[in-house]
Length: 253
Image (cartoon, rainbow, N blue to C red; front, top):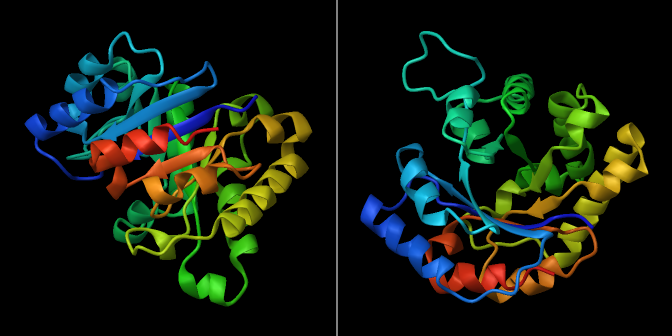
């Protein structure tokens, strides 16, 4: 069975005290999670160690980094390498979030380098892909997102690709209050799974977790997650509200 994942992306929010209080409230709730269900909390770099300590001993919860550098080391002021994250015992990292693509001009080639370094350092990449509104209006979303996968991931061996988690995030639905319908999410997730199958075969395609990201909240998570090819969510704003994120976790199928 594919892993079902509820991933919180805090972005650049919360002070340390607020962050610790939020995590304590989330982990103190009662869950019936099984071995195939995990919760990731992607926190700002300065909070990784503190939040990791709070999650210690809880097998269903893991801390996650929001980004890593596309180089190993060197004169790159402000960057954090995959090796550094590995040395902190961080196991997951978000790569290619639409905000990184848009605000920091990260292209598919750069993201391929990040994916390689993450895998070399035993990090599981959560690789984000998704289209802007004009691309969907032109009905070119399938080709656009397929190309993101091909240019950033399809150089990988089958063994390495099997370690990837995909997050489909339609850019037009991030922080806008708009949400792709559950049918739209399922349609794209099914397409992505077929694209992966064409490159790596049925077994890897069927075992790859594909998350939906784009204004996921407590009120819509259960319906979105119920779709056959949706394996959870990458959650932004709603993950900053304990009751909202707890309900989203409990919506995993």
